[in-house]
Image (tube, rainbow over all chains, first blue to last red; front, side, top):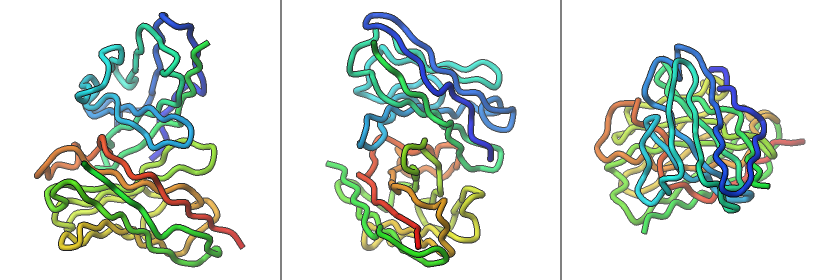
Length: 110
Length: 126
């Protein structure tokens, strides 16, 4: 159960788009359509933003979208806003019927 | 309103034990699987464990397997995490999270959902 690989940090200016990658193996990300993404502000509990690779829970802005290609899942945030400045975490289902997170990505909105 | 309230965290010596609780309200607890996720200080999230609706099916991260036990009391709307043989690397904020899908029995749907508790801090140190 090795952690998924995410970039430590990404940045963008308000109004721009950014993409955060989440790379695993064929035993997790590549093998299933079960990747979720979470947003976490400092000192707060995580918030679910995307589930099952592409689905948004009700109430989550359509500026957030998810995709997957091979062993890499991606979270794209369009039209960046200051409140998007947060940590983002991916999680994937694994062949062991368990779940594994990525290391997290710090998004800075410049 | 869905609420999850963790308790039981604190300072414990290496090798010691601790039992965390998560009191649930605002939904039919016995209809949902539940999970535990932890976060070491300044680090990313780590999935710990999940338990099915009935409590008969459980899964654990390799890092805690054999030391931690997840359980639930559906009559008291409470989730538990019994932690034994604690190590310094178990130091973290522990969150309980509700699985989104009701009456769901497939582990592929057991991602931590929209509702999380505020977390309880466990510190393992001598």
